[in-house]
Length: 472
Image 1 (cartoon, rainbow, N blue to C red):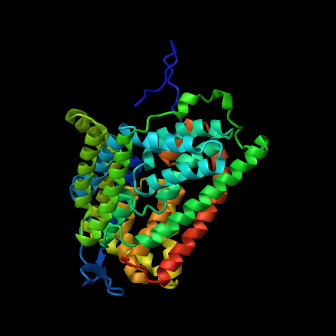
Image 2 (cartoon, one colour):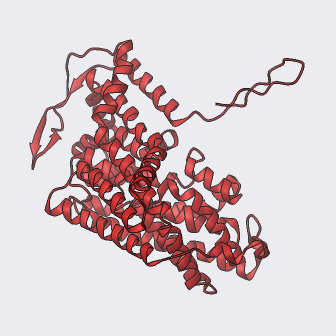
Image 3 (tube, rainbow, N blue to C red):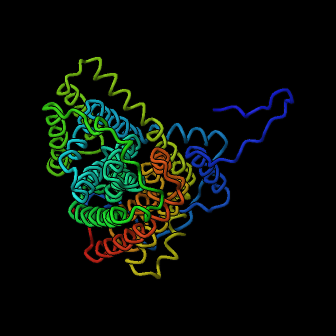
């Protein structure tokens, strides 16, 4: 933490400027509000039944019950218990970070991207398309996501080579990553966690998500290309000024892409496909996936030619990078523990269901989507938001007549879309800083695309409700 600036000799301390509270600070404030609410909100509970092995709320059975408000020590005990109850999810995030760090440190990802760039040089549309698709897939499977920030610098190099601007650089890297992240058909940090909490099969409902992925990424590429084509015809149309091609070095677009790199990427792709098969055939869970990431990290390191110490330290470095995001899961869980112990969680679900009762299931699903988008302003962590939202959305979905699969996607869209424009999104602001793009300029460029994404989300959620989208 930096100390306040002090003027020399006078001893007068300048006031620090106000800054946005950290996600942990916000979550702790929410935890305190939850504790206060235990003294104000009546305790209550729904009756539940088990259907196909899943415990579901029985609508219309809410009644008040006896409950105990939270005490001072309950605040900190909830934090401890939140970490314990979320251990499987926390280690999933950590081990995934470790595995992907080994893959990234091998140079396979950078080498693959730059090889694709060199293969498509001089063909601007294909260059934008190929790079965007690679980053979108990385976002959809959780390989890149928040780790996209250093790759934005590569986007700047590519944009300079094409005589385009820094907005294109951000769009084909960060923008494409989060276009894929919006759907996250194989993302363990978002859909994986949300489905685990909702008690539906891991990575189920993938077909509809893949269709949405293709549509969203395709439109994002078209939108980026339309802007890029306008700049190629008239550079003065740029919102931030076209990059100087003379600053681009040929060496910047070179990186080795060896046989080892190809084997690493092929192995990781095959491993993720096998996991999909295992979740269906062997009923693998979050714990299996966390363990499997250890295998992915070790084997990738061996293929990369790392010795055992290098594999271990690289894996641990990757885990360390995600400690911040992983522990958010436990803190978010603490909020729910306080509400569950005081028996006010069902009261909150009942209160939320009342305004939705008069709505059709389609509008109820859209309401969940909007609510999650607003929540993401305060909790810009996909896994943390899943921990807060899904325990509420799951029983709420049962009550308003929509499937839990739809509720998961409502959360995913609400979280994913706003990451691309909310200034509370750390990866967004860091990516803009790397490229030198002012947030206002990015927001002006991004808003029309965001509105198109929202229309797609409305259509997908509506279709999901109408077809009774379940674990298919």
